[in-house]
Length: 289
Image 1 (tube, one colour):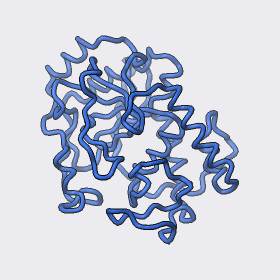
Image 2: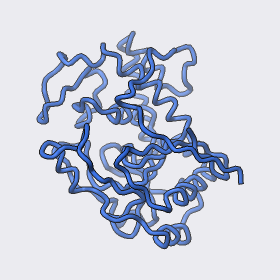
Image 3: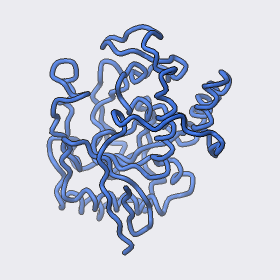
Image 4: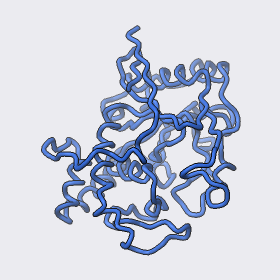
């Protein structure tokens, strides 16, 4: 279920069934993974994956706000702590760790709908012990991305997002079909923030040719609150989050062990992840060239 590029970096491509990729998506992926391979160990360990769609909204606030990395991002990509769910490439190691976390996190004891109140959109917060301050994702129900937000925040991990010529250009195009999270009315406003133009091969080749840095280390980084930050600061916040779970004792300390680095190998998975959340199609591509 992995992509392996010439640097032997393993990753998986996760495409929902209404995602249309650019013909150059794998070229872009190889370009970013080559920078990952040359980065420092700290940076490598901090990359959750890369997104083929750009980031145009802050969906972690309610109501949503439009967003752009702005002129401070001079290169063709930037790093963001918000995970991607539209055309995502996840590195295999963090993806496997996330699956274990999500399997345990989705235990019914943590998602009791009687706990807490009701959000402005009708979502329920589940167990408030997992809440991250001020995030709208605390109230999401029926979304695996809620757990990935927690996972990435706790581990201080980031996603590489494209920053091509115009904000509406991306490496994937969402057809925005009605489904679990894309509905007219309640979530129909999401369509206003879609990528509307697929990147062409010239767009991608320009980015590869004119990219300024050989590694990801010099990239501008944004935290979960859409503010510029550093890996050190984000990891410090993640440690505080994990420690807050540890102090609560079982079963929260077991969840904290799944988030700790290095991982505690004695903590077993509670159950297999629900296909409702994690059963996406994965593309396999292997190249030893």
